[in-house]
Length: 127
Image 1: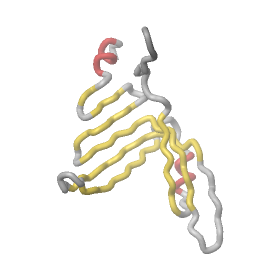
Image 2: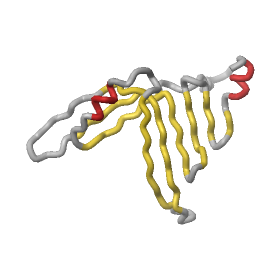
Image 3: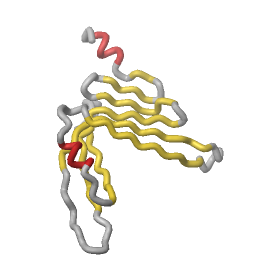
Image 4: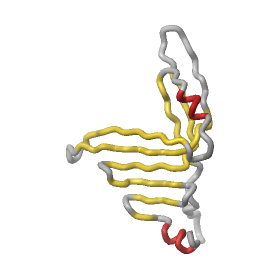
């Protein structure tokens, strides 16, 4: 070869940081989850596309485990924030119930816009 080529060797470790406002004991409950995929988290929102003015509902699903839970700082009269770090093993994004992206690291699933990017590999391995 006459130059460098970036090869697709899979994903790096997936992480998500989420900042929560206030102190919530449910954050500590998340530490009790056992396994790398036992903790489900879901976000839902809506936005209006600027090109078509279509309203889009977005769902984001993830599973993983809490890897960092700093307690933040508490000050009288101020709102406390806690930034939790999650090790993510499953991520799915849907727009208007259409699967945009699905990554399941544990089960070897990678779908983008309905195209299964790992089926040939899984079939060759007998999975």
